[in-house]
Length: 259
Picture 1 (spheres, rainbow, N blue to C red):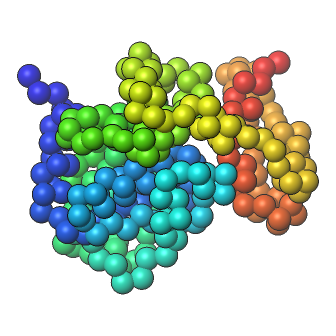
Picture 2 (picture 1 turned 135 degrees about the vertical axis):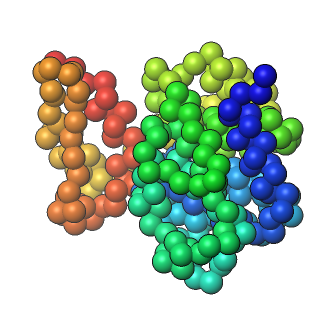
């Protein structure tokens, strides 16, 4: 019996057979999983001979510049009109911040790959798995289904997404399947040591160190749920000359706070 995810993977492969150009998008203020997912598919599609356009609404953190293909990322879409659009890791369609000419384009097929809970995802194919550690993990499964060879560059991209979104393999979404995939990626040449150093590097300039301290100092703890939370305002960004991507990783600290 063929499971539903395998049918969706089959559908993705079928759509690509008729495509010449592909747009790959993810959410604003992209985290490592979003960036890695976009770059992984961009790498694969270029090797397929497709015209591939990796788009993010704003630039990711420079700490991710070690990722293969990082400088291929575009933050503007002008006249590019794809046959297929892949929407990754976004949860809510509005977070993609797509330009109007793409929203009204009728002849563009849409595919979503996402590990967020079902919300406002769109597309004729929606490969969703809220139990997956990351969108990168789902992409690995499709690559494995499609028998697409994974080299060191691809392994680095996918492992970065998994490692980051699983909280360094600490979140409950880290399963035995996740760790089996990690093992395969290490065998393909990905360096867990390098990825950990790049994504867990908390060295920061003075203004960002102060910004993190300010946000952590306002952390609240809900006594009923045990949920710790904080927030960043536009005024904070202006005060500390920061961007939202500069706070990537701060949730890993807040999530382990207890009374």
